[in-house]
Structure formats: structure tokens, C-alpha cells
Image 1 (cartoon, helix red, strand yellow):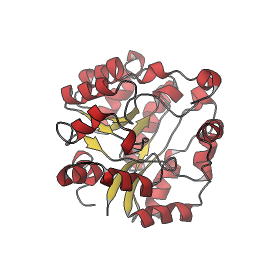
Image 2 (cartoon, helix red, strand yellow):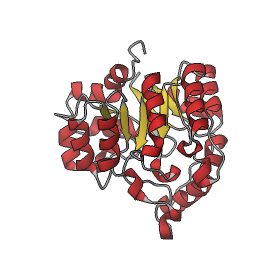
Image 3 (cartoon, one colour):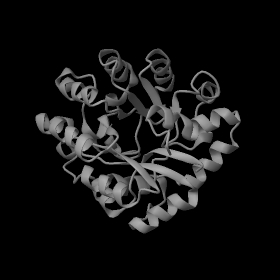
Image 4 (cartoon, one colour):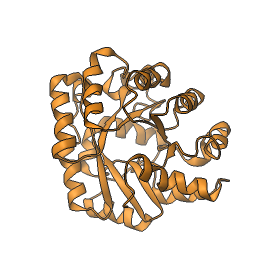
Length: 284
């Protein structure tokens, strides 16, 4: 095993339908397509790259009106392909209130998902909005970690008006900082390099011991020099590998991570050891 991928979408038709208009816009912006995979093709990608993955569900129905990639779907893939898919991140739509809380309990306790993923831009909510604090309280009670998107997003990128999406929801300060301070028992993993607030996210991760950082979604060579230095030193125990598959291939990511000037022991921590420790995956 070369890596544990902490943030991997199923590249199947279910995922495509959840993000369809955004994917179509993103393919035009990137000038390249993201072909829909069968389950078997997806698993072959993981095996060929020698990675173990944590698949991600998503529910943004209230804000987007699009169908979700359900917790049941992701949990089913975990059960069907345990050699490659070692766990799953569930999702709830925070605007569903008590139903979201009930679904959070079901996702963790009944379906066995590891925690929940949130995308504040697409779900259009501030994580530090006190209306959602009962949901965070429930996740603390469940001892379930959360992933929260920070910084810019490819969803709506390059389109006039950004397809109506607002980046303001994903600023680490105050959103992640407030949440970490108010819920010290909640393990929070920021997703992506947090541009244009990379230094803010660094500050939050260093200040709040319950905050970690998944660097998925960007080619490693494009990370800011200050972040590269910190990965090799003071952030080495706080960062995790993620792909954002199918947006970026594991082959490319691993080649680029290994081509950068990171200490061998730091790269091992980033690629899999930190995930094993932080998420309790030590048996993988």
C-alpha cells in the first residue's frame, strides 16, 4: 500500500448525477472530461495505484436541488469492496434539521461510516452558525470526525457568477476556528489547501489541536512554498493525503508527491501514517 486516500469520490454515475451541472461546467473550464466509471473500473484504478480509499457521500439537496450520493450507497460499496475501500465518509444536509441529526446517527451507528463530510459552499451554510450546533453536538457524542471543505472550489469555477455559489462560507477564520474552539471534542479535517486562506488554515491547524488538514484536490507542485515548508516541518503530524478522485488520478498525485523535496519520514506520515493514527486505521 502506497497511500490511504482520505477523500475519494466514487467516480460512478451516482456521483455524476449528484454534481452533474457543476461537472459539465468544470470540464469546460479544465478543457478535459471526467469519464463515468463502472464500479469495476473504479476499483481497478485503486488497485493499479496501490491505494486504499475512504469514499465520500454527499447530500446538498436543499441548496442544489440535485440528488445525493447517499450514505447507503457509499456504505454498500465499502461492504462490497473491502480490500480497496476501507471506509466511508457519510454526509447529511445541515438544513434538514432534526432529520439531519437522525441521519447522522444512522450513518455512524448503523451503516458504520467513519464520520461526515460537509461542503459549506454547495450546502450554503456557515459551519459556525449556531443554528447547526445541535448537529455538531451529536457528532461529538458519536465520537465521529468531520471533513469540512475550506477555500475555493472547482464547483462553478470559471462560470460567470460561479453558478451562484459563494466562497465566503469556506474561510477557515472564523468558520473552522470557531467550530474547533466551541467543540474541542470534535475532530475536524479541513479539505483542500484552503486557497486563498492557506496561511489562515495553517494558523488554525497549529493553534487548535483538534484540527487536521487533508490536502486533496490540488497537484502537489502547485502548493504554495510556505505550505510546502510547513508540511516538511511543523505540520508533518497534522496533514493527510487525499485525491479528490476522479478529478485527479492517484498515479499523478503520488508521482508528484514523491517528486517533491519532502523527508522520507514526512512523506510516510502524509501518505498513510497520519490517517492511521488520526482516524484509527492502524490495522490497515
